[in-house]
Each structure stands twice: as C-alpha cells, then as structure tokens.
Length: 217
Image (tube, rainbow, N blue to C red; front, top):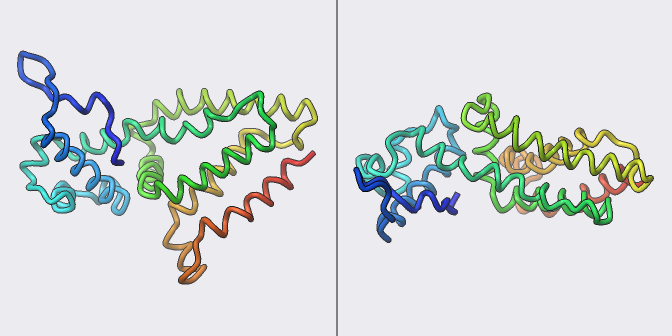
C-alpha cells in the first residue's frame, strides 16, 4: 500500500522523542512498504520473509531492519490503515439517498477496488484467513459497528417499501463475496475466462443486473 500514515513520517530519536523522517528515509520506508505489499499479498504472512522484502525493495536486509524491527512490524504498518480504506465505501452509503442507487454505488465501488487494489485485498483476505490476529479487534468493533449501522438503514428502506425484503447483513456479505472475489481469486477467474478478457468489465453489468433484480420491490 503506497499511502503511508502521518505517524509513519516520524522516527524515534532516543531521549528527544520523535523527529521527522528525512526525504531519503521517507523514500526508503515507502519502498519497503510497497515491496512488502507485493510479497505479503503473493505469499501470505507466514510465507513471506525479510529477505524477500529486501530483495523486492532493492535494499539490504540490515537497511530494512533499520526502518522496521521485524517482519511483524512491517505487516502491522501495512494493515494499520487498510481497514479504514476498506470501510470507506460503506461509510459513504447515504441514508438520505435513493436506496437502490446507494447500494449499487457501494457494490460498484467495491468492484472497482478489486481492480485498483488487488494486492491490498489479498493482504486483507490472508489476514482474515489466519484468524485476523492483528486486526481482529477492528473487525469486532469498527467493522461490526458500521455494518450494523448500515444494516439498520437498509432495514428502514425495506420497511418503507423502497427495497425488496432481504436480510441486510447477508446483502452486505454478498457484496463483499461477489466483488472481492475478483481480486482474491484473480488467477482462477482469468484461467476460466481465458486470455484477453477483463474480469471486472464483465462482472459490472452482471452484478448490476443481479442486484437490481434482487433489490427491486
């Protein structure tokens, strides 16, 4: 994930606390995080090594360890802002908007994220498949709170007769499953479709039709 958090623009400086990173330090830190995203998304946390990350970043292993004390620290730095990125499209669902269009906009944005951020999607999926040891608290707090809030909005729309009666939680789960699949199982999807076909381009009209029919009262 190329974007870094503001807190990552500082480094420890002994008794003086934190001091800003130099330009070179920011560049190197960014190289390490970008390389780690590639390595972790391809190999998972357990299969990734510091040597692989250093080689991908074009830096020595001691140089990598200058910025991050361990593989775990790099992984946690990547995951740090990822949950917020993942939740942003759902947060954008407007209770005052037209119900079907709000849900369809959410679905389309999640599908586009599979095109734009496949490595981040696989990083997130690998973390969850391992039992979410580093983001579990966020799943049971931030994620659950937001999903419950939006499920209540969807229930309200259903009660108004503006949507077909569906289970709102499972509707959201189905959107996750039918969009993130194209990032997490990209190799499988492309193998089945064959060369020269854009999976996302093909998925968009199908999912539009599917959810339009599902949600129409």
